Image (cartoon, rainbow, N blue to C red; front, side, top):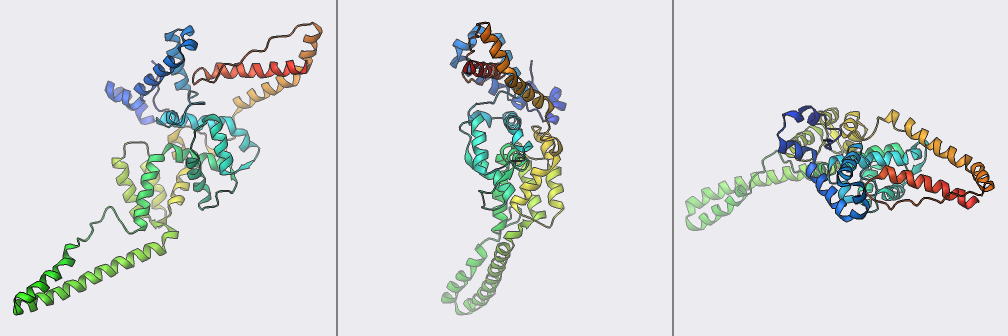
Length: 373
Protein backbone atom coordinates (compact mmCIF):
# COMPACT_ATOMS: atom_id res chain seq x y z
CA UNK A 1 0.00 0.00 0.00
CA UNK A 2 1.28 3.48 -0.83
CA UNK A 3 2.00 5.67 2.18
CA UNK A 4 0.22 8.98 1.71
CA UNK A 5 1.20 10.65 4.94
CA UNK A 6 3.20 13.79 5.33
CA UNK A 7 6.43 13.60 3.33
CA UNK A 8 8.59 15.54 5.76
CA UNK A 9 7.45 14.07 9.07
CA UNK A 10 10.55 12.04 9.93
CA UNK A 11 9.26 11.21 13.40
CA UNK A 12 6.15 9.61 11.95
CA UNK A 13 8.23 7.60 9.47
CA UNK A 14 10.50 6.40 12.28
CA UNK A 15 7.74 5.44 14.71
CA UNK A 16 5.01 4.33 12.32
CA UNK A 17 5.49 0.64 13.09
CA UNK A 18 4.84 1.35 16.78
CA UNK A 19 1.54 3.11 16.02
CA UNK A 20 -1.81 1.39 16.23
CA UNK A 21 -3.85 1.02 13.05
CA UNK A 22 -6.17 3.89 13.96
CA UNK A 23 -3.25 6.15 14.93
CA UNK A 24 -1.45 5.45 11.66
CA UNK A 25 -4.55 6.10 9.57
CA UNK A 26 -5.17 9.38 11.41
CA UNK A 27 -1.51 10.43 11.13
CA UNK A 28 -1.41 9.86 7.37
CA UNK A 29 -4.91 11.23 6.55
CA UNK A 30 -5.76 8.04 4.65
CA UNK A 31 -9.50 8.41 5.20
CA UNK A 32 -9.42 11.93 3.78
CA UNK A 33 -7.76 10.72 0.56
CA UNK A 34 -10.04 7.69 0.29
CA UNK A 35 -13.08 9.95 0.58
CA UNK A 36 -11.76 12.34 -2.06
CA UNK A 37 -10.82 9.48 -4.40
CA UNK A 38 -14.34 8.05 -4.24
CA UNK A 39 -15.87 11.51 -4.74
CA UNK A 40 -13.73 12.14 -7.82
CA UNK A 41 -14.57 8.72 -9.22
CA UNK A 42 -18.31 9.32 -8.87
CA UNK A 43 -18.11 12.81 -10.39
CA UNK A 44 -16.10 11.68 -13.43
CA UNK A 45 -17.14 8.05 -13.72
CA UNK A 46 -17.53 8.24 -17.51
CA UNK A 47 -13.87 9.19 -17.91
CA UNK A 48 -12.33 6.97 -15.26
CA UNK A 49 -14.42 3.81 -15.54
CA UNK A 50 -12.63 2.85 -18.75
CA UNK A 51 -9.37 2.49 -16.82
CA UNK A 52 -10.89 0.15 -14.25
CA UNK A 53 -11.48 0.91 -10.59
CA UNK A 54 -8.29 -0.78 -9.38
CA UNK A 55 -6.10 1.14 -11.80
CA UNK A 56 -7.92 4.38 -10.95
CA UNK A 57 -7.20 4.06 -7.22
CA UNK A 58 -3.60 3.04 -7.92
CA UNK A 59 -3.05 6.14 -10.03
CA UNK A 60 -4.81 8.37 -7.51
CA UNK A 61 -2.62 7.31 -4.60
CA UNK A 62 0.48 7.35 -6.77
CA UNK A 63 -0.25 10.97 -7.62
CA UNK A 64 -0.70 11.72 -3.91
CA UNK A 65 2.62 10.08 -3.13
CA UNK A 66 4.38 11.97 -5.94
CA UNK A 67 2.79 15.24 -4.79
CA UNK A 68 1.28 16.21 -8.15
CA UNK A 69 -2.33 15.70 -7.02
CA UNK A 70 -3.09 19.31 -6.01
CA UNK A 71 -2.68 20.98 -9.40
CA UNK A 72 -5.85 22.95 -10.33
CA UNK A 73 -7.66 21.69 -7.23
CA UNK A 74 -9.81 23.94 -5.04
CA UNK A 75 -8.25 25.77 -2.11
CA UNK A 76 -10.21 23.82 0.50
CA UNK A 77 -8.59 20.62 -0.77
CA UNK A 78 -5.11 22.11 -0.99
CA UNK A 79 -5.09 23.30 2.63
CA UNK A 80 -6.84 20.22 4.03
CA UNK A 81 -3.65 18.32 5.02
CA UNK A 82 0.00 19.21 5.69
CA UNK A 83 0.98 16.88 2.82
CA UNK A 84 -1.26 18.80 0.41
CA UNK A 85 0.16 22.14 1.53
CA UNK A 86 3.74 20.98 1.03
CA UNK A 87 2.82 19.53 -2.37
CA UNK A 88 1.25 22.83 -3.48
CA UNK A 89 4.31 24.80 -2.38
CA UNK A 90 6.54 22.46 -4.37
CA UNK A 91 4.38 22.74 -7.50
CA UNK A 92 4.42 26.54 -7.24
CA UNK A 93 8.22 26.43 -7.07
CA UNK A 94 8.53 24.09 -10.04
CA UNK A 95 6.11 26.08 -12.19
CA UNK A 96 7.57 29.53 -11.59
CA UNK A 97 11.23 28.88 -10.78
CA UNK A 98 12.30 30.62 -14.04
CA UNK A 99 11.04 33.90 -12.54
CA UNK A 100 13.66 33.68 -9.84
CA UNK A 101 16.25 32.40 -12.28
CA UNK A 102 15.71 35.48 -14.45
CA UNK A 103 16.03 37.77 -11.45
CA UNK A 104 12.56 39.23 -11.87
CA UNK A 105 10.93 41.15 -8.99
CA UNK A 106 7.16 40.90 -8.66
CA UNK A 107 4.57 42.62 -6.51
CA UNK A 108 2.17 40.92 -4.14
CA UNK A 109 -0.66 41.18 -6.68
CA UNK A 110 1.47 39.51 -9.35
CA UNK A 111 2.38 36.64 -7.04
CA UNK A 112 -1.30 36.28 -6.19
CA UNK A 113 -2.10 36.00 -9.90
CA UNK A 114 0.53 33.28 -10.35
CA UNK A 115 -0.89 31.27 -7.45
CA UNK A 116 -4.38 31.56 -8.90
CA UNK A 117 -3.15 30.06 -12.17
CA UNK A 118 -2.69 26.73 -10.38
CA UNK A 119 -5.44 27.25 -7.78
CA UNK A 120 -8.17 29.58 -9.11
CA UNK A 121 -9.69 30.38 -5.71
CA UNK A 122 -6.46 30.88 -3.80
CA UNK A 123 -7.12 33.77 -1.34
CA UNK A 124 -5.21 37.02 -1.79
CA UNK A 125 -5.17 37.60 1.97
CA UNK A 126 -2.77 34.73 2.50
CA UNK A 127 -0.45 36.18 -0.13
CA UNK A 128 -0.59 39.56 1.63
CA UNK A 129 0.43 37.95 4.92
CA UNK A 130 3.39 36.30 3.23
CA UNK A 131 4.44 39.60 1.62
CA UNK A 132 4.31 41.38 5.00
CA UNK A 133 6.91 38.96 6.36
CA UNK A 134 9.34 40.24 3.73
CA UNK A 135 8.34 43.91 3.75
CA UNK A 136 7.50 44.27 7.47
CA UNK A 137 5.40 47.36 6.75
CA UNK A 138 2.36 48.49 4.77
CA UNK A 139 4.23 49.14 1.51
CA UNK A 140 2.51 46.19 -0.12
CA UNK A 141 3.16 47.43 -3.65
CA UNK A 142 6.93 46.99 -3.37
CA UNK A 143 8.43 44.30 -5.63
CA UNK A 144 9.80 41.15 -3.97
CA UNK A 145 12.33 38.63 -5.21
CA UNK A 146 11.15 35.10 -5.92
CA UNK A 147 13.37 33.50 -3.26
CA UNK A 148 12.29 35.92 -0.52
CA UNK A 149 8.65 35.45 -1.35
CA UNK A 150 8.53 31.68 -1.70
CA UNK A 151 10.22 30.90 1.63
CA UNK A 152 7.99 33.38 3.44
CA UNK A 153 4.97 32.03 1.59
CA UNK A 154 5.68 28.41 2.48
CA UNK A 155 6.11 29.26 6.15
CA UNK A 156 2.92 31.35 6.24
CA UNK A 157 0.86 28.77 4.34
CA UNK A 158 2.16 25.62 6.03
CA UNK A 159 1.97 26.92 9.62
CA UNK A 160 -1.00 29.24 9.11
CA UNK A 161 -3.04 28.22 12.17
CA UNK A 162 -0.01 28.24 14.46
CA UNK A 163 1.05 31.72 13.33
CA UNK A 164 -2.45 33.07 13.94
CA UNK A 165 -2.22 31.89 17.56
CA UNK A 166 1.29 33.36 17.90
CA UNK A 167 -0.03 36.73 16.67
CA UNK A 168 -2.72 36.64 19.37
CA UNK A 169 -0.06 36.01 22.01
CA UNK A 170 2.11 38.80 20.62
CA UNK A 171 -0.73 41.33 20.59
CA UNK A 172 -1.62 40.33 24.14
CA UNK A 173 1.93 40.93 25.32
CA UNK A 174 1.96 44.35 23.66
CA UNK A 175 -1.22 45.20 25.58
CA UNK A 176 0.41 44.14 28.84
CA UNK A 177 -1.32 40.77 29.08
CA UNK A 178 0.93 37.91 30.10
CA UNK A 179 -0.86 34.54 29.93
CA UNK A 180 1.59 33.09 32.47
CA UNK A 181 1.07 35.68 35.25
CA UNK A 182 -1.74 35.95 37.80
CA UNK A 183 -3.97 39.00 37.43
CA UNK A 184 -4.53 40.97 40.68
CA UNK A 185 -8.22 40.56 41.63
CA UNK A 186 -10.35 43.67 41.79
CA UNK A 187 -12.02 42.60 45.07
CA UNK A 188 -9.30 44.36 47.10
CA UNK A 189 -10.28 47.64 45.51
CA UNK A 190 -13.88 47.14 46.64
CA UNK A 191 -13.06 46.74 50.33
CA UNK A 192 -12.80 50.50 51.10
CA UNK A 193 -16.48 51.00 50.26
CA UNK A 194 -17.48 48.42 52.89
CA UNK A 195 -15.32 50.29 55.39
CA UNK A 196 -17.12 53.53 54.60
CA UNK A 197 -20.49 51.91 55.20
CA UNK A 198 -19.26 50.72 58.60
CA UNK A 199 -18.38 54.29 59.51
CA UNK A 200 -22.00 55.34 59.27
CA UNK A 201 -23.03 52.49 61.62
CA UNK A 202 -20.35 52.71 64.28
CA UNK A 203 -18.15 55.78 64.75
CA UNK A 204 -15.21 54.03 66.45
CA UNK A 205 -15.17 50.97 64.23
CA UNK A 206 -15.89 53.18 61.24
CA UNK A 207 -12.82 55.29 61.98
CA UNK A 208 -10.56 52.23 61.98
CA UNK A 209 -12.18 50.87 58.89
CA UNK A 210 -11.85 54.23 57.21
CA UNK A 211 -8.12 54.28 57.91
CA UNK A 212 -7.77 50.78 56.53
CA UNK A 213 -9.80 51.84 53.54
CA UNK A 214 -7.45 54.74 52.90
CA UNK A 215 -4.45 52.40 53.03
CA UNK A 216 -6.09 49.92 50.67
CA UNK A 217 -7.13 52.73 48.37
CA UNK A 218 -3.56 53.96 48.25
CA UNK A 219 -2.39 50.43 47.44
CA UNK A 220 -5.01 50.26 44.71
CA UNK A 221 -3.80 53.56 43.28
CA UNK A 222 -0.23 52.26 43.33
CA UNK A 223 -1.29 49.07 41.55
CA UNK A 224 -3.20 51.05 38.96
CA UNK A 225 -0.24 53.36 38.42
CA UNK A 226 2.05 50.35 37.97
CA UNK A 227 -0.39 48.99 35.42
CA UNK A 228 -0.46 52.29 33.56
CA UNK A 229 3.33 52.46 33.58
CA UNK A 230 3.56 48.89 32.29
CA UNK A 231 1.09 49.58 29.48
CA UNK A 232 2.91 52.79 28.57
CA UNK A 233 6.20 50.95 28.47
CA UNK A 234 4.65 48.28 26.25
CA UNK A 235 3.32 50.95 23.88
CA UNK A 236 6.64 52.77 23.77
CA UNK A 237 8.54 49.58 23.02
CA UNK A 238 6.02 48.17 20.53
CA UNK A 239 8.30 49.12 17.69
CA UNK A 240 11.03 46.96 19.22
CA UNK A 241 8.70 44.07 19.91
CA UNK A 242 8.19 42.20 23.16
CA UNK A 243 10.44 40.58 25.71
CA UNK A 244 11.88 37.51 23.99
CA UNK A 245 12.02 35.33 27.10
CA UNK A 246 8.34 35.89 27.91
CA UNK A 247 7.43 35.45 24.24
CA UNK A 248 9.33 32.15 24.14
CA UNK A 249 7.65 30.93 27.31
CA UNK A 250 4.22 31.64 25.84
CA UNK A 251 5.03 29.95 22.51
CA UNK A 252 6.38 26.82 24.22
CA UNK A 253 3.16 26.63 26.20
CA UNK A 254 1.19 27.02 22.96
CA UNK A 255 3.11 24.18 21.30
CA UNK A 256 2.35 21.84 24.19
CA UNK A 257 -1.37 22.11 23.55
CA UNK A 258 -1.36 22.76 19.79
CA UNK A 259 -2.77 19.96 17.64
CA UNK A 260 -1.71 21.04 14.15
CA UNK A 261 1.74 21.57 12.68
CA UNK A 262 4.20 24.02 14.23
CA UNK A 263 7.91 24.72 13.72
CA UNK A 264 10.45 22.72 15.77
CA UNK A 265 10.58 24.05 19.32
CA UNK A 266 14.37 23.86 19.29
CA UNK A 267 14.44 26.29 16.36
CA UNK A 268 11.98 28.68 18.04
CA UNK A 269 14.14 28.59 21.18
CA UNK A 270 17.31 29.23 19.18
CA UNK A 271 15.78 32.30 17.50
CA UNK A 272 14.28 33.90 20.60
CA UNK A 273 17.11 33.16 23.05
CA UNK A 274 19.51 35.06 20.86
CA UNK A 275 17.70 38.41 21.27
CA UNK A 276 16.45 40.55 24.12
CA UNK A 277 13.33 41.74 22.28
CA UNK A 278 11.56 40.42 19.21
CA UNK A 279 8.87 41.79 16.90
CA UNK A 280 6.25 39.54 15.35
CA UNK A 281 7.38 39.91 11.75
CA UNK A 282 11.01 39.74 12.81
CA UNK A 283 10.23 36.37 14.38
CA UNK A 284 8.46 35.18 11.23
CA UNK A 285 11.31 36.33 9.01
CA UNK A 286 13.80 34.43 11.17
CA UNK A 287 11.67 31.29 10.87
CA UNK A 288 11.32 31.70 7.10
CA UNK A 289 15.09 31.92 6.67
CA UNK A 290 15.93 29.01 8.97
CA UNK A 291 17.14 25.83 7.24
CA UNK A 292 15.64 23.54 9.90
CA UNK A 293 12.17 24.98 9.30
CA UNK A 294 12.59 24.46 5.56
CA UNK A 295 13.64 20.84 6.15
CA UNK A 296 10.69 20.29 8.49
CA UNK A 297 8.26 21.32 5.75
CA UNK A 298 10.14 19.32 3.12
CA UNK A 299 8.79 21.11 0.05
CA UNK A 300 11.68 23.30 -1.12
CA UNK A 301 15.43 22.84 -1.48
CA UNK A 302 17.80 25.05 0.47
CA UNK A 303 18.39 28.60 -0.72
CA UNK A 304 21.58 27.76 -2.58
CA UNK A 305 19.76 25.16 -4.70
CA UNK A 306 16.42 26.96 -5.03
CA UNK A 307 16.96 28.00 -8.65
CA UNK A 308 18.67 24.75 -9.69
CA UNK A 309 16.55 21.96 -11.18
CA UNK A 310 18.49 20.03 -13.87
CA UNK A 311 15.60 17.70 -14.65
CA UNK A 312 13.22 20.58 -15.32
CA UNK A 313 15.87 22.46 -17.29
CA UNK A 314 16.39 19.43 -19.55
CA UNK A 315 12.65 19.14 -20.11
CA UNK A 316 12.42 22.81 -21.08
CA UNK A 317 15.36 22.44 -23.44
CA UNK A 318 13.66 19.44 -25.05
CA UNK A 319 10.44 21.41 -25.60
CA UNK A 320 12.35 24.39 -27.01
CA UNK A 321 14.21 22.06 -29.37
CA UNK A 322 10.91 20.59 -30.57
CA UNK A 323 9.55 24.03 -31.35
CA UNK A 324 12.79 25.01 -33.10
CA UNK A 325 12.77 22.03 -35.51
CA UNK A 326 9.02 21.99 -36.15
CA UNK A 327 9.07 24.19 -39.32
CA UNK A 328 11.45 21.76 -41.09
CA UNK A 329 9.35 18.77 -40.15
CA UNK A 330 6.22 20.59 -41.29
CA UNK A 331 7.56 21.38 -44.76
CA UNK A 332 8.56 17.76 -45.32
CA UNK A 333 5.16 16.64 -44.16
CA UNK A 334 3.47 19.07 -46.55
CA UNK A 335 5.49 17.81 -49.46
CA UNK A 336 4.33 14.29 -48.75
CA UNK A 337 0.76 15.54 -48.55
CA UNK A 338 0.43 14.14 -45.06
CA UNK A 339 -0.99 16.04 -42.15
CA UNK A 340 -1.42 14.59 -38.65
CA UNK A 341 -4.71 15.29 -36.94
CA UNK A 342 -4.06 17.43 -33.86
CA UNK A 343 -4.65 15.70 -30.57
CA UNK A 344 -7.25 17.22 -28.34
CA UNK A 345 -6.06 17.88 -24.81
CA UNK A 346 -8.18 16.28 -22.14
CA UNK A 347 -10.15 18.62 -19.87
CA UNK A 348 -8.52 19.68 -16.65
CA UNK A 349 -9.14 17.08 -14.03
CA UNK A 350 -7.53 16.62 -10.65
CA UNK A 351 -6.10 13.23 -11.64
CA UNK A 352 -3.77 11.93 -14.31
CA UNK A 353 -1.98 15.27 -14.42
CA UNK A 354 1.13 13.84 -16.04
CA UNK A 355 -0.83 12.23 -18.88
CA UNK A 356 -2.86 15.41 -19.45
CA UNK A 357 0.21 17.62 -19.48
CA UNK A 358 1.86 15.35 -22.03
CA UNK A 359 -1.21 15.53 -24.25
CA UNK A 360 -1.33 19.30 -23.95
CA UNK A 361 2.36 19.56 -24.88
CA UNK A 362 1.94 17.36 -27.93
CA UNK A 363 -1.25 19.17 -28.93
CA UNK A 364 0.33 22.62 -28.69
CA UNK A 365 3.25 21.54 -30.90
CA UNK A 366 1.04 20.04 -33.53
CA UNK A 367 -1.30 23.02 -33.52
CA UNK A 368 1.75 25.17 -34.30
CA UNK A 369 2.60 22.84 -37.14
CA UNK A 370 -0.91 23.12 -38.55
CA UNK A 371 -1.00 26.89 -38.38
CA UNK A 372 2.27 27.17 -40.23
CA UNK A 373 0.97 24.85 -42.93
